[in-house]
Image (cartoon, one colour):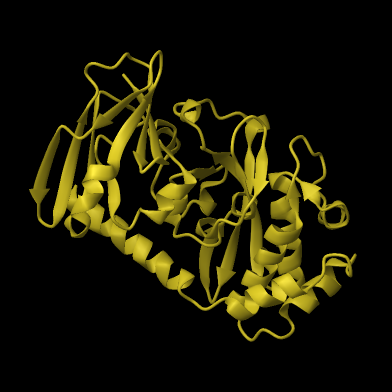
Length: 299
């Protein structure tokens, strides 16, 4: 399990290297190009990429322009790239289709990926239904395929059918092992990991803010969405983190549970949380200072 933790940290470090690339110029271009001037995908894409020298920056400029200018509209049926560009509103299929179309115009390899995504505790062990699919993209930069979700990068669902447009850097480009915590493609060709559908269904729900902490926190045992207890591993370089880490239990009566046991082993702190006294089927959310990280069902 310790070996898995360090492997997971390594993956996140690789993703961080991409994030540390300076995107200032690409982002500046995306903000400067007005959404009102262009009705042609080809001309818009040229304006976004002509002054950028490498494929990563070109992709970044296109990606950021979409997150800035396209609005998520619940129930929208618009999905054709030209219509998305004209209306500036759509759902995931429209976002991903537009990203692919603009990448095609920039001669960047990009594909539309259809599959399923988990964002709520009720998604644990759900049935994979064709009419509940989500859409995202795989993009090839310098010979390497990477995964991204321009829809989730563009907006945040704060509940009650309320969508707030806010950029989330985490979904720009991700290593496959991290992306697979929330996404599973209908065609496993675009998974790039050994995970199977059953494992994906059973695993807990990872909230967007988890990726801000995933370089030093992970599930030690058990790594499933239904559990009687939970053990969380964190780096001992942030010992004080333990005091701010807790489970919020949602059920008949909201309850907060802190770690009842902490074990130090090989540079890691293993925090044990016991749910014996909690009603079965209650929802448990791991939080840090009121920020939701991972969600489970208690069994």
